[in-house]
Image (spheres, rainbow, N blue to C red):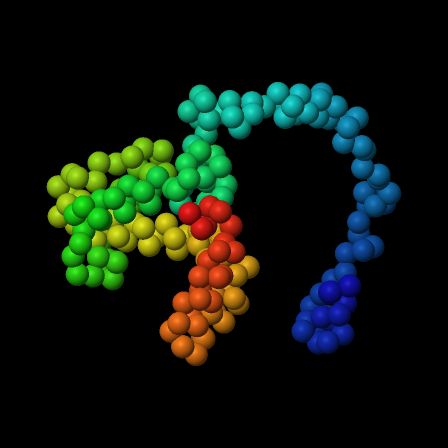
Length: 196
């Protein structure tokens, strides 16, 4: 059908195109494909058995084969899997910043990209990196950048898509006092993992 349409519209001159309908052997056009289950019965049986015998997610985690993601994972799901109230990455980073990072622009200036990636990899590997190493003490901004990266990669933002309109209305309130009351009210509506 598309070829006939193109011929009619004039994309290809008809004298340059040879239709092959008449040249296809009848044995090919009349053949009916055999059911897969008869032809590949043993393979299908093997695949079904293999899929049923797969270890559970919990067993894979116990063996150390499956690692839970930290970055880019839903906040509620991550906390449920890790058993924490607050993500370890945020806990470690904020404690470090409160102790060593009270400097101008801690969240404004970016850290060195390679340091940020090292930290990210360690947290994603379910390790707690030693933030007091010289490499991080000398580049305190990489820890602040890691926090921002964590929040930026959340599939559902910290303040959630669902409450976006309410937060937007709250910050648009006329007076500071009214704004504070409205923002406080919306924060109370956050899901527990996001609220914490």
